Image 1 (cartoon, rainbow, N blue to C red):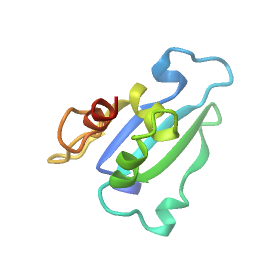
Image 2 (cartoon, helix red, strand yellow; image 1 turned 30 degrees about the vertical axis):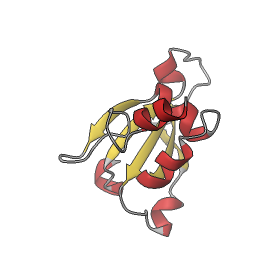
Image 3 (cartoon, rainbow, N blue to C red; image 1 turned 90 degrees about the vertical axis):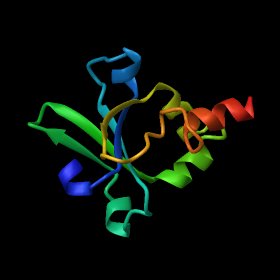
Length: 112
């Protein structure tokens, strides 16, 4: 995924992070870009199967859009980022999960 989509960060979210995996669970990844992903990459949110055994969802989002949407704690970004785990962070990039002036954490604490 990193080689194909060149993200700034890859997050794991959903049932695998929450410990709610069942036989029907897929693996959910959120790929974050600092620039607006191309139309081809935006349309690359897809369901894939690895080896015919593992279902995978891959979503691509632009960092600033994601952070703005995180202000709504009940929306996709707000609820997903509260329970996500970072799997990859490009060297020099700031995680959307790390406390800081442009992080989801700082937005969440300012709005409460």
